[in-house]
Length: 363
Image (cartoon, rainbow, N blue to C red; front, side, top):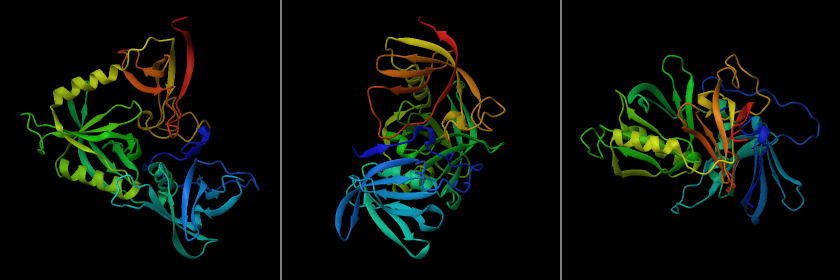
């Protein structure tokens, strides 16, 4: 099993990149107690002695490798002084899963690149970039128009491209409204929209960012000062060079805006499995409409009733079927999140908190 485990209560023990989260506090002193890991992965280490398996453990403060058979520590690096970065090794093979981390021992000497490989390379690199977020600059910022599906309006926002994904920022408040990691983008990851006359491969239309795990796609259009081509080029290059993800751009569908809205509405309805149970609940969201990675159950309730200062609380229906757990909006039955219980994903998607205030609707 290549993916070892994650602590759900500490998954992404830092928020996704935003202007309001840029540093971390010093680690607590617990003696020899094992640190709370953000993630643990089975990897293959490449060295002059050959190739051998290791368990790669990532926390906010320490990077540790363990020998799988005995769980004894083989290497340990302090994030603050001994870790300088990580990068994918880009080869001719698109299925390459090799990457390097730049480390040194005991805060002395030069940083050296250690080579590993793992089929979960994108997730590992995403976590490694997150733990040194305060040292990373934004890759690019672009003015965009975001398509509001319900009103068919194009609303101005700022699209930030970071080492690990994209962020949608409100112009007036600077608040993070939505984010998507490169590792969570679908295939195709980007769909080009045609212009009002149905012509594709032009810069007068727009583009759609598609995500995995039941999350909804979102449509954008370049605003004045940039182009769709420039944004897409920056996205694809950054995803490849920073986390080793090749984003596929589909220009063959030639979707018009109205066709996309109709398709997006059908996607929102979701699957029609027979419910085993349904509950009216209150969803406790973090910032960015709940798409921001939350730092666990210890996060305090904010002034709006959600997780953290900018979080909020909204009414939802939580529906259990034989194959999935679905979160729907009660006013229009639109799916806002779905988890397929029959599949074990290589990582925990996110921590979603609910307050159960009503009984089973189907009891």
